[in-house]
Length: 597
Image (cartoon, rainbow, N blue to C red; front, side):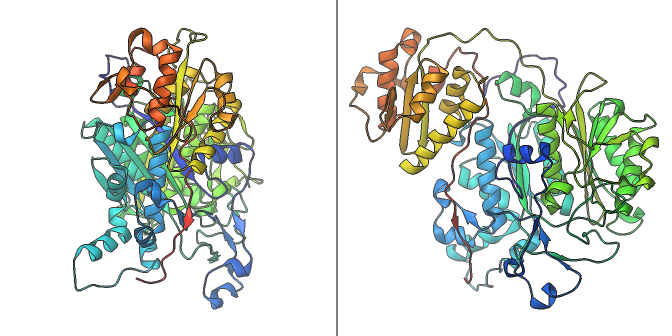
């Protein structure tokens, strides 16, 4: 990473430069956003034969067959991480999901773990109960390598250290236990570490798999689980929420450094705060307005944010009138007396209650809303609960998806997460800074684009996904795409490269056969005299006029696909290219489920 120049950025600001999500109804953050803006509910209503519970439960008249199903909860691609099938089966579902999500987040941010020379903090929350339900390992007399390996694969505590280890990174590893506020706590701790200079970048998030999966729930009056399986935030007829599973991770870096490093920025963390109700709670596990209000106000104060500049409030929003009223009251106290200026919404209507990752769903919604400048509707809200008295609060329910116009001139969002046991947490996010203008891309300059994978099938999948991505986003510059591919992806055995002069040529090359047009692959590359290249400790070097010469770049592509190392940093030296989000590695998941030890 480069040294950050002096900037007018608040030293307490942290940039969100990468994101990954899997939720009910969405395998990617792009699908998640599409579901939100189109008002789709992703809670499933199950057939009896699909539910894995005791027969006495499923036949209860109060059993609700609703669940936010995560369709990849039992699948994993261990080959990417060099993990054996035996070890993959021993790992809990949350360990596996968090590992893949952390990988995707780093790639989304444009970083290759093999080329990082930095301390990467890893902070994550999971559900300790999942490990027990997955069948805890036997109490071995031996503490030899096999016993230790099995225990570390299974343990909730080692989720973050496993991610560091299998991604080849070093840094802090902190696994958080803060029940349903776990995601927010992970982000809070990550930001603290970054601002103290203990880490250079951080991955923070949470993973939740409710076992048995899928399953519904038993409805009990005045409890948080819905009578009919639908969650209706702020609705007079709300009866609670449904249970769901998922994983969300974000890649964080101090804002000034992110700008200096030409990172893509989704949003900025302006402030975060956590507290606990403790003995002052109205009832153990129930939101306490004064303490929650103090938490929300503290997050804004830490970020130097005035409440009247926060125009989106993403609520915990369980959809139970009693808890919604407590939260709206607490947030109103924190925001003060201004009225009708802040959109209020709740993502649980779309995806249910994801436990430790529920705050992650809300934070992802807010970050994408800031990035796209759009406010998604809160679904299942048909009759606003009059007891919430919204006209006397700062909040206006978001009933329709709309463009986000801010009266204050800047878009900011507050996201609240509440956990049983008195845990409160709040994040304040801000829209990304305006990107500095650049000169138009040099027309006709040849550029090298690279892809790699473990096998040819995955490589073909990568080509197809990248081609679709480029067609869908005509604003992407070729220099940014090549910069992000060449420096932001782990190099694997099967390789594809193309030397192209335009986006259109790259799109055509991606559609061609294995060696069609300007592209070469591991299987079809011509022989190259590698001795004709200069090299350094990082590989083959092109510099000066050679970097813009078509024959030299073509020879370099052929050398790279046949296994030679290339110093891509020197290839892009002096450019103004920026990292941009591109499709991440196409995992090829297989089912892993342990039945015995």
